[in-house]
Picture 1 (cartoon, rainbow over the protein chains, first blue to last red):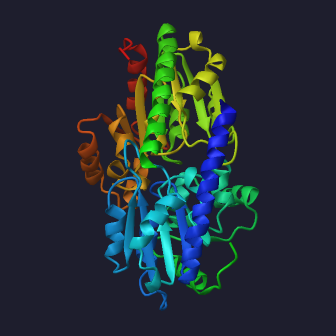
Picture 2: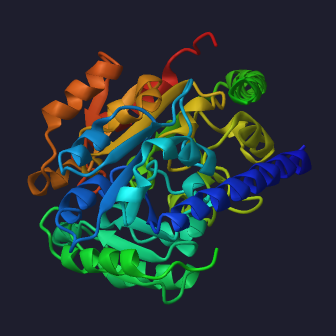
Picture 3: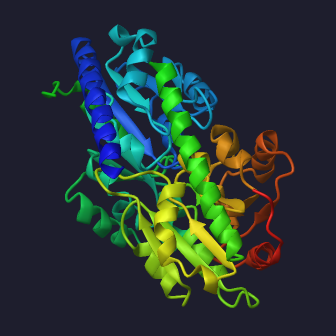
Length: 226
Length: 226
């Protein structure tokens, strides 16, 4: 029973990998850098995008929003005058808990790739499955809120291990929490030593300028081999 | 392609339902009330259990811990001198993002059902899939932290719609957040009108006594028909 289950998972991931490479080839052909933004629910991804996407030093940016239901986040982003495309993962029942390469592929006809330098994909809020499904991104960035506790890197290691940047958000709340930042960093090092990290507050804006610089640099970097 | 996918999902859920009823029959035979505790990562489930399970008015309580990886939460609960059984959902790669009835069933031989009145199942931190998989529980309780924002009930409706009690945690942080409690309650009413709700802080202990009374009452209630 277990062996069968694993086999199915491998087939699914294999098909996903093929589609992710097809997406990536399309992104590369248009010269678009793609960032897959992931976090637990409520860690502050949308607020961070609201804070950081205006006037990005001439970088033309678009957003692909993944949500189980509702257009709430997409509507917030649209207020920034940024092209935004919405994927709802809920064709039935509870919905899919992650974006996969095929969902992103099906949305691509709606994304104005030839008008963009940078596409941010805001994944479904979840610390498990989004990390398992590549969507064709150049970079994986995850947002971890200090309200979630110091143990998250070792409890959800795949997410923290496979990302290129960890954003530690809501640092304005540190004085009101028992959260030990050095313990979080040690846990992060234990699963992904030397991964770059940025401390910021999407609410107050502290640290957001460094994230904006990271985005501009990512958008102007040469494409990497897949 | 889509139709096939839905078909597979239905089969999985059907098999899960059969196993959940088998679990429930075992729980009923032993007179054990079972609570399935769900939330996003870091909403405070384990801290709440630490706060609430000691000296529960003669109710004999046990815990079944579900985590992708690590025994961190199980070790915290074991310090309470409460029987605790751990399920790690990570047989390979990123791990399963939820408990299902079969995982719980495979753990039952390790759970001392005849020594318990109440079994708390701490599910994997995730707002999507745990709601899709019954495990044989009498009650579903979800913990929503005020740090996650007011929109979560409408963004993850199945979770909020299928639970019997919503615990609003971390209310000690309200003075430091933009969170509008009345807006959260309106969103909650929109997906699950009149669902009981408890406001508390597992950190300060405010409101926890009411949750302890809810647990004692749940444990002494007559079994409901499945």
